Length: 76
Image (cartoon, one colour):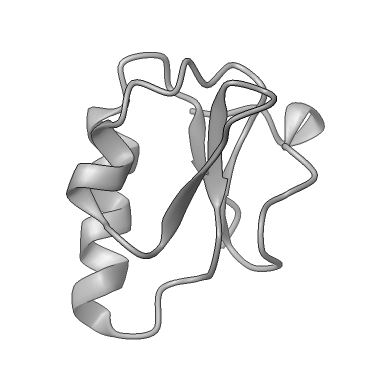
């Protein structure tokens, strides 16, 4: 699980977030497109907007469970 203390500042306010351990592997973008975005300068992803439907929430949960470095968190 991601570390809330290392939460990236770009994350949209809400329960899902990405921390600074992200390696920008693209998995979250493929799993939940539109929810996650890339910070090219920092070389990591972040939550661009919180999920808006139950389906998007399930995709975010899937990305969280699949993240190879456990950089996605759920603070809800």
